[in-house]
Length: 452
Ligand SMILES: *Cc1c(COP(=O)(O)O)cnc(C)c1O
Image 1 (cartoon, rainbow, N blue to C red):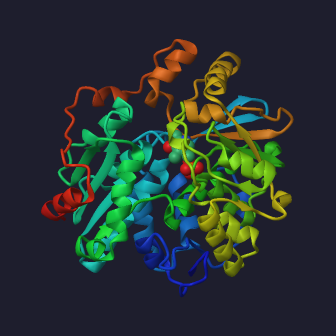
Image 2 (image 1 turned 90 degrees about the vertical axis):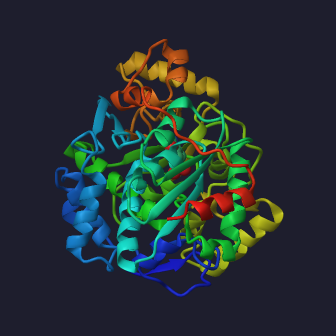
């Protein structure tokens, strides 16, 4: 399979190159040149073990690894998820299901992408003989999942910047208590945007990027999208045979990566009726899908912080397909968006998306409602998925994080303490952070000194 840029200004590349580059050189995002059809037996069979499904799926896109190698990488990525199904489908009511995506090492769905990314980086380093330094900024889940994907791997050091005091204690512990000596968590005074600005400055300086052999793990890497597509098929295969028509998938959404992966697999033949974009109070995508206008506003911190976004970076991929793979049209819309700060998208209701939004009050109310109705505890992100459900449809809500990651909000909603063994164990470990001044020069020198 070849991958092309949504902006059309780059030659098609293979799997290795699309993975290594992340962003395409013309500033666009890589997408598969063609979307293959899912093998039809998948849609009638009972669930395969997760790794077996993942080999089959990734094999359709990756011609660069031989299959033995790919099987090994996939096994190492998903072999130690705590639930044998990896992504078990839980039935709450006759036509209501939850897809639990929090059985990976850091208890959020980000592990599905970043465990694979970690093993692919390791393989790339062995193949090319070139060590790399991964640099990123995080407001929580991405940083911890990236760190766990790469901890202890040879030839890679990981530098993750985060806003000191503005992520939860447990999220900080997931990043700082790994005990691995290739991991460098760096607390920065200021906000997430301040941390992100430093990363952008260093990544944007091509001389520095090359000299320090910097790589990113952000949500635009096509491999993360492919990895996330797999669990939609896995969910479908776990549905009872008589519930497989007209399924709705409800997806708590921020950067549009997770839901885009589902929509992509629908284009490959997975029968889905609606994709419901569930946003929090930062509802740029809710406004887009109800008005056709894409217009960022200021971000207001919410109870579902991993969905607190201004611009949904994966949206460009959807726009490209909405434009029927017309890269020129996508390029000019993105240029207009960047110069004017918003765009109006013509014929926007042509697709099978609907949208909801939840205030912080709604989040607390939904946690309470789900607990009372089904005796099931959802985390604040997943709670957004229970807003305005259509009771007449077979509905699968994606549970994107384990509730024990957000004990304060759960306590506030239902007065219960939720715990999880791996998080409890973390509380006894010592945090290890690196104090570096919060400016690009200081971070550059620190990476140089501690480079892989
Ligand atoms: C990242 C994240 C989201 C948002 O996912 P996107 O792919 O950015 O839309 C939702 N919930 C949790 C728990 C997350 O970590």
